[in-house]
Each structure stands twice: as C-alpha cells, then as structure tokens.
Image 1 (cartoon, rainbow, N blue to C red):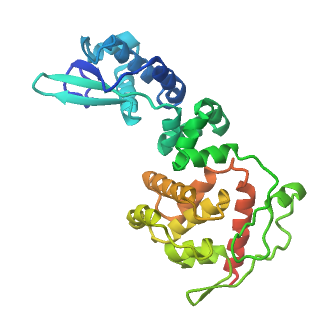
Image 2: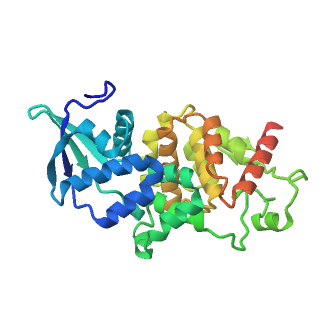
Image 3: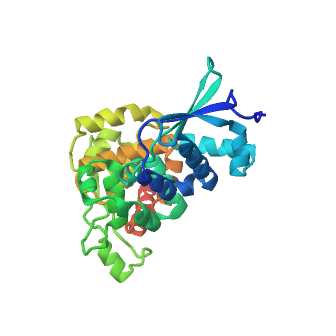
Length: 332
C-alpha cells in the first residue's frame, strides 16, 4: 500500500538508464555521493541498476513498496532515499498514466572533474567531509589534462588553487590599489603582528567627484561598475562579465553593496590582481551560490562567505584587515 506522503501514483515500476553506467561510475557513486545521500539511497540506486541486467529498460517483477522488504527499510526511508537521489540528479521519476506505471530513469554519477565543477554539490561534500578529505577523495582523481581542459571553469580552477595554493614567499597588499601603507601577508605570518597596534590604512581616494578613505567606504557607496573600476585601477567590465552579472543584480537587496562585497571578497581572499576570467567566473559562481541559498543582504552574505572560507590561508589577514577598514570608515 502506498505511503500517503508519496508523490508516486503507481505501484508497478520500470527502471531505465539514459546512458551506459560503468563500474567506474558506480565507484564514483560510492565515493563521492555516499556522504550526501547515505547508504540507504546508495542501496536503492544499486538495486535499480542491478535490475536492468545490462539492458536499457526493465519492468520490475516487484511493486515499489516491496523494495522496503528487499532493502530492509521503512517506507518513509525509501521515499527519502528516492528524493535524495533525484535531488542530486542521479535519478528522474516519471508517471505514465496510459500504462499505469512509474518510470525510474537512472543517470550516470558525475566523474571527479564534473563533480568538482558543480558548485552546489561540491560545496555540500566539502561541508560534510572537509577540504583536506575532499582534495584526497575528488581532486586527486582529476588528471592534469582534465585540469588544463577545464582551467577556465570557475569551480575547477578556483577551488583547486584555494586548496592547493601553498603559502609561498610572496608579498600581498591588503588594499591592492591606491592604499600606500599595506600589510604584507608573509610579514604578518612571520612576525605575528599585533593587529591592535596602529596601522595607517587611510588614503583619500577620489572617484566620480566623491571622496573615499578606503576600500570599505568605496564598497558601500559605489555602484558595481565603478567599484569594479576602483578595485582594478580603472578596468572596465568585460562583455562576458556584463552578460552574466546583469541578470543577477535585482536578486540582491541594495543591488550594489552585496555584489561589491563579493567582488571585494574574491579579489582579496584569492589575490586576484587583475580582472581575469578566473576572477569573473569565481565571482559569478559565488553570486549564484548566494542566490541559491536565499541570501540577498550584505550582512548575511558576509557571514556566509566568511564562515565558508576559514580554511583559506589568507583568511586571518583578510578578516583582520576588513575589521580595521570598517573601523576606519566609521570614523569619518
């Protein structure tokens, strides 16, 4: 008998697959998806796959709810497992009224490269297992050729460098343009400078007839195009950046501060000195992630980005410098 909370209409079901699913695909399923869907969902996928017996389509000998007995789970657990598989794109469900059957269509699990390029799924797994384990589990399986081929893909390239970028001996200015007295990251790490000591970050910046004392004040007062020019010393939006960022503007509360903050975050957290394609794609990726998580105001956006970046080697310098910039801006 059907669970009253089920969205399915028919007991009898057919299993299909869109394309060939190999043993490597099943290995990817177990390794990459297990922390996200759980063992019960993996068992359901495996059972449906086995029922195909190397065919593209197979009518099951069992009714859907008999799977509870076969898998030794409760009806609500079966429904939850199915929906988890659907939510991660591993399975699609259809109803055919004429034949009074339900169709489960299995999709191939993503390989390491495609998994790493999917920002939502990747971020979920990183949250579950941590960045170090993610690097060993997923990134280690991406060949050098694949990384090169996908170098312009914001998720592949950016997160690769976020995880593997070693603290090499290089100086990096906190306020990259127009700020004369900057804090050098390596100097901070070696001397463990006390941030309570006075640091002069005040530099008067004239743009569009307005005067801004530092990055934070400019962030809160400029529109996104002018702030972009401010960040990158007069550089203009590229056509591709304009194309992708324009539809996102109205998704945010003030339309300017939130996007300005993301651009500021990406530039400083990842040391983008020029408005490269990688900077653009990473910025668009973060904006889409924020929209998907229902975050539209700068307070929640700042909190979200900071809480997801504490493992970044630049995090401490970034947050302490931002704190100083806020304090300084409030004095004027």
